[in-house]
Image 1 (cartoon, rainbow, N blue to C red):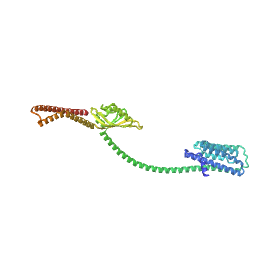
Image 2: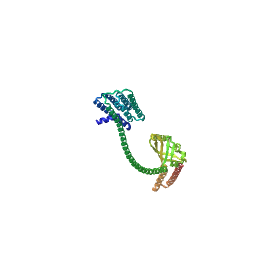
Image 3: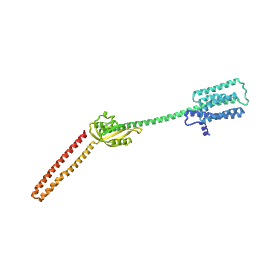
Image 4: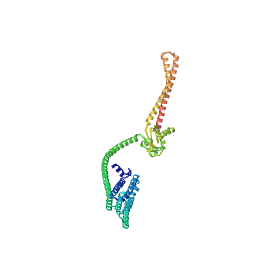
Length: 431
């Protein structure tokens, strides 16, 4: 029974309704249920007293049920208008039909109930004025129209009962307000406690965040110092540039300025080929750009030419840099100088070529005469030649000696010329 009564009182409530609307809805439903019960009891009591005219009060029942139906369909505006103005018109009608039975007192009670029914103040005032107008209309009618008492109606009992009912309605409204005030007070107290607990938790969290922030700030300063040290180390030893998609320099570090011979103003905004040596093909640059535009990192050895014309080599890595949307906007180039390694490799290659050339010349220009000298010397040593052949052998030895001298001179001249050529190439590379 209690569960069904609770559902009936909360008829029309939904989760999206705020607390004040919920309280208003519950109050109206409780008023309707209470009015329905009191109306039935009122009718039963007066029937027992022998008054059949009290059955007219059952006209309230369909209207009460209609209001509850409108609440179940969420038609709150129509339900409130019916509760206020519809009930007043019905009470006024019953007052005209059963004069001086005290029904008119219900008009004042319904006017007072408008505070619970309506939310806006002007609606409350209009409803109360309408109730007062209905009451004044009844009083005017009662004074100007002849009154014939109904012998079956106990007027004294009816008036007292309806006055009691009117007072009970006002009392019920006061109890509703009392319940609302207490409910709000409890919720405010609970909210205050929750807020206080939340503030304490927030204070503790704030202290933790403050401590964490101090530690984080210290860590950031340490990492920033380390990062700056790394940046300084890069600027000292690593060639670093940032270029746009067209290949024009946006940023260059101090190492680029130091190695290229250009000033920063001379490089910013210019194409990177201002440093090209001319020894790389167009296909080399085209292939590199294609790989970078796909988002892949490129690495390779690049030969540059300084402003003074000196050729320098770098082992470079080029990294595509994307923006927050993942679109490639710039290229970062990091390079490590390998000029000395390249010069050493070139010198080693030239030295090997020189040694091979010396070996070849020695094989063809010196071994022949030496072999013939060894052969003639062997004949003389074995004493297998006569006196007349000694002169021929001597001539041959002189000829071989001359050939050996010429070959040695050519070899010395070849080595000297090759050394001069290597020195010239080295000087040209350093210019």
